[in-house]
Amino acid sequence: MKTIDYVEVLLVEDNPDDANLTIRELKKHNLANKLVWVKDGEEALEFIFGEGQYADRNIEFKPKVVLLDLKLPKIDGIEVLREIRGRQETKLLPVVMLTSSREDQDIIQTYNLGVNSYIVKPVEFENFSKAIRDVGYYWLVTNQPPQL
Image (cartoon, rainbow, N blue to C red; front, side, top):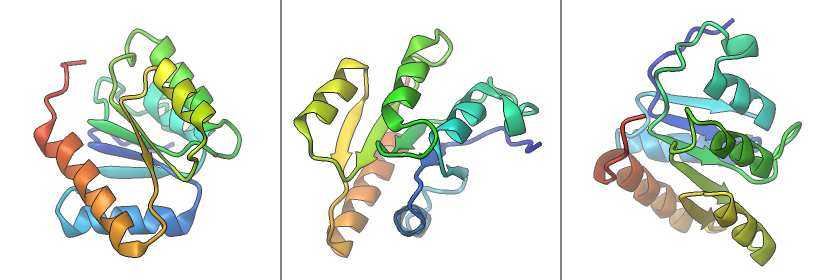
């Protein structure tokens, strides 16, 4: 069991290269002090809802933002988003889809399910770094979330 309480960023990403780049960029700008990285949709749901290996986690402490990949093992990002939006205690939790998919159907479906933002991961390193930095500043510094 993992006992983790206060978290600002929940990064849900199965690609270690993308995850490491994201974490490095957020840390570089002091935006990842309280970041948890999970590698599949099942672990993301366990973390958010305090189940499985995270059963000891106090779920009163919700992340400021969930950075969610679309294509994930076990449970995909769309199902994770559907579960988050389907429960009263997490329906307002900010979720940013951070994915390589530019498919209109993915964009439309995630917005219909209530995603707060949809960002296509830039391929170029500099653009990827800038996108992560901008996301971090907006969701962790600028945005005023509701009290959940």
